Image 1: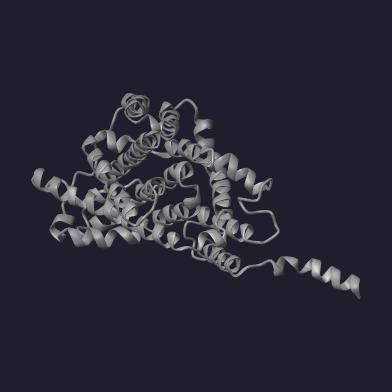
Image 2 (image 1 turned 90 degrees about the vertical axis):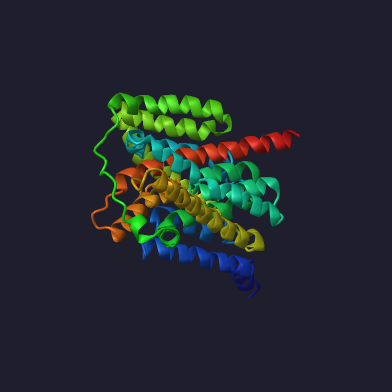
Amino acid sequence: MNMFSTAFSALMQGFAALSWQSVVMILIGCVLLYLGTARKIEPILLIPIGFGIVLGNLPLAGLAASDQGGIINILYKSGVLTELFPCLLFIGLGAMIDFGPMLANPVVLIFGAAGQFGIFITLLLALALGFGRGQAVSIAIIGACDGPTAIYVASKFAVELLPAISIAAYSYMSLVPIIQPPIMRALTTKKERATLMPPGEKKASKTVKILFPLVAGIVTILIAPMGAPLMGMLMLGNFMRESGVVGRLVDVSQNTLTNMVTLFLGLSIGASMLGGNFLKWQTIAVFALGLLAIAFDTVAGVLLGKLMYVVSKHKINPLLGAAGTSAFPMSARVVQKEGQKANPRSFLLFHAVGANTGGQIGSVMAAAAMLAIMSKLLIK
């Protein structure tokens, strides 16, 4: 009888160690799995993250990101804390991006700069709420609307908030088609949204497209060296794409490398979302501030678009400003959709993609500026 009791106790120790916080997190993980599987909402991101949450919150399994020596702990330390995974993702992103629309109409770069405005407003709000400098910077970068950039910054200055920041960044990236349209419609008139622009026959030459990643990489890194790992990998991927001589490397970067890193990154981030650390008021604040950051980005972009609409004598559609975020290519598609709602003959996608890719560069530059400021403050 004692042997049976001992065996039963040994088999049930996992259930006995299960806390209510772990149960809540497992349920959250299951919700993410449902959204990714049944609703097909960002499945490449939500399925690894959701499964990582479930595994990480199973007691005694040794699968949490903080469980020393565990397989996920090894992935977390070697890929997330070293910033390796975000940098590798930027190689794949660079290999996917076509900077041609931006190079054909360089004026859209200004929207990429305006699309980072929310980052700086959110930084001030986070500081006002009592977050530390490193935490505030990391939360504000959610406004870059770029998951790898947010993870890169948070892993340097706010590891304790990394799970919440990661989930917020990727969630809001997928929710851009819901977040942006109401703001775009509220700030513009139907006449402004109906503005027709040329479909984009002008194209950048092959030479310009090859030289751009090299020149832009050198210049931007000299201006903001703290962003060198991200910008360097982004431009490496793009140079390979435009060179046209390393098709196999481009294919690996776009597919195998990006998919593999996304899997490991999502699993690691999910397994770091432990109930005791995640279920706090700070987590709610991170999500709220992240939403505000993206909203402010959109507001600033659209308002700049309205100014350009006036300055250009009604030749630039103000909706383009909303594409200045680095949520590529979702923001560009949102602009195209809203433009066609106002005018079925409108074709803004070419110009919106240019602004969107400009936002990708702007997000890295904004992150680099934040990192440089933080480094100076820490030295003092």
